[in-house]
Amino acid sequence: MWLQKIEQWANRLPHPMALFIYLCVVLWVLSWWGSVAGWSAQHPVSQDVLTVRSLLSESGWVYMLTNLVKNFMSFAPVGPVIMVALAFSLAERSGLLPALINGAARKAPDWMLPVTVAFLGVMSSIAVDSGYVVLLPLCAAMFYAAGRHPLAGLALGFACVSGGFSANLMVGPVDAMLAGITTEALSMVSEGSVSVLSNYYFMVASVPLIVVVTVFVNHKWVEPYLNKSSQVDGGEGLQQMPPSVAWGAWFWLSLLLIVIAWCVLTLPEQAWLRHPDTGSLVKGPFMGALVAMIAVSVALLSTVFGRVNNTLKGWKDWVSALEQGVKDLAPYLVLMFVVAQFVAWFKWSGLGPILAVHLAGIMESWELSSVGALLAILIFTAFLNLFIGSASAKWGLLAPVLVPAFYLLGVPAEAVQGAYRVADSSTNIITPLMPYFPLVLAFALKYDAQVGVGRILTMMLPYALSLLVAWGALLGVWLVFEIPFGP
Image 1 (cartoon, helix red, strand yellow):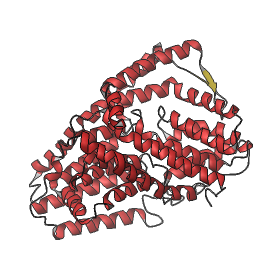
Image 2 (cartoon, helix red, strand yellow):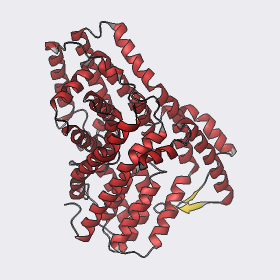
Image 3 (spheres, helix red, strand yellow):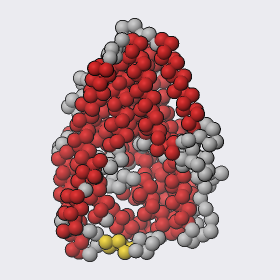
Image 4 (cartoon, one colour):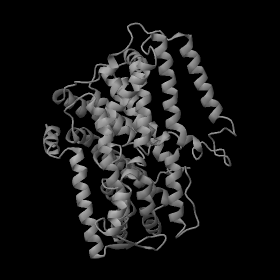
């Protein structure tokens, strides 16, 4: 089977920790050589000359040594992951999570489970990165409770959370962020603006496409492959459900109070978590508080459930559950220390922006039709995405070059932005440089102690290729028939 051949090749990759250490060494050499050779580029907006800074210079060593701890402590994925892991460890050890998942698995039809996981994964982008830390472990647990391979659930969830990141039925932070950057870029050649709804029609149509494609890939290739090649040897936490579950009045009262608290904090026009001037939830404190609110809510409900069912008998059990959550995260935290250094050093060196500007300039010089130009953007971005993960950072560099250039070729800005979004999402799931890739590996190790980078890449490659082809085809249909991208 072709997936087995890919995994055999991918398993030759070193341990993720070693891989990132090697990448750090390569980065040192490249930054030194780029500095000596005078690699540079002109920023398309500020017109500043971007140069490479050597990590092996005096200033480079000072930066690395003085920021070693800061890089790790301020690395964006670490804090939310720890907080949610603590809360969900309580949910597991109290029996709340097993009770909910097992109950849902028993009642839902077998065919409905992958569809539900895929749909929730796509829609999770409304909460930005929360889907990675909240939804992915639940996807694996739901498959496990239903008697199916948990890694298939994890892979399907990851494919939709990350591979389908730009699609949604609702306008969210991603739309606002990208539209703002596109408008700034368009202002260089036009007085027009790009609305947050500029890709709405296309992204709504993308939701069912992504769900169908990922569920088909899961059913046709990934789950059968895992059933033949991977043996589950974990998941013990999900088996700790009380023999007879008692929800009790205290649990329902706690749930009611939590719902009321969420409503009070978000629904009124002057709610504390809305923007004080505009009243927006998306651009207000709510998005920054969302992970904490989920974690605190889950922790409170789990504590009450544990007391009602006598699974958390006192402070000792409660603290032990939290300690277990940290223990489960230990491999992830060790790896993330090195990942955080690589990401920070890569940014400091300036290699990423220079690479992006030069490659975008090459694309700008090609004489292509509008459809060909957008497909070129799709392929180029999909490749660049393997090395630079942040959607906003990449678009901030590419948009000032691509949007004006293709606008002058008659390609509307919303179409350029739409092509970028397709490619930016599709290949996120097959690069170890993606910040949440190690987290997926940590979740997988809970069920299969032998899993490595090769297994994750093998699981995700069919999703990435299928999404890139199918979503790219949808983009082509949109362009050929000149369907509006948004209102």
